Length: 201
Image 1 (cartoon, rainbow, N blue to C red):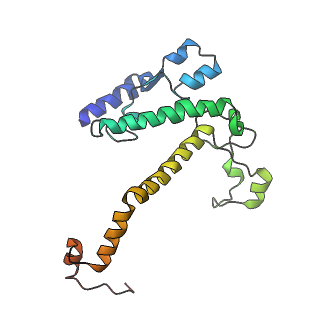
Image 2 (image 1 turned 135 degrees about the vertical axis):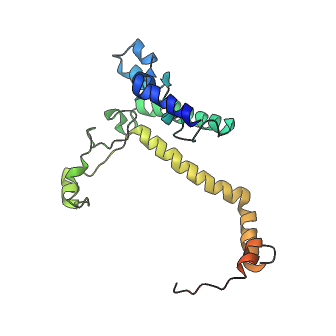
Image 3 (image 1 turned 90 degrees about the horizontal axis):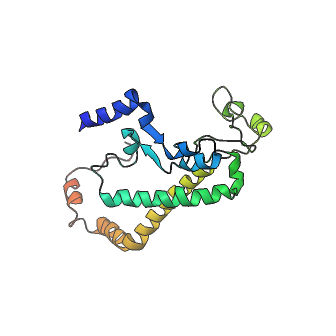
């Protein structure tokens, strides 16, 4: 398995780097900005081929170990968020998003230029509020990053709400049992043989 991973990375990484990420669809009209944003490897990547093993295993570790339904779930979420919602928001210019690239992890100022953090930090990498207010306090993130952050926060909230709605009663019941009835809990029985630790420790 490790040999296969090494060879899979080594060939596109050193012998033929173009195979790491190749957008053959983008070659149809390389000078068309919108087409390259949608199909390019640094854009939405529709039609791009990815042979880089590190990119394949970046989310769920090895695709061999993760069940198929998990891959389908992530792919459907990706298509909805990145290939449908993001272009609609970007091309309707929500939050003046067209001043920035469609997908990047850089921060920008209000005019769409890279935000120079060295202008607002002192020598100890702490915020200098005077220069921060003078340079401009509006930092903008690209729309792709905002959508990713939004869906991530929604996922955390959904996990908490799901746990409360579907498993809340059993969680509370088990918590109460662990406080009152220690006979049924094997861990509490095993730990009862040891002395309590002092508070100051």
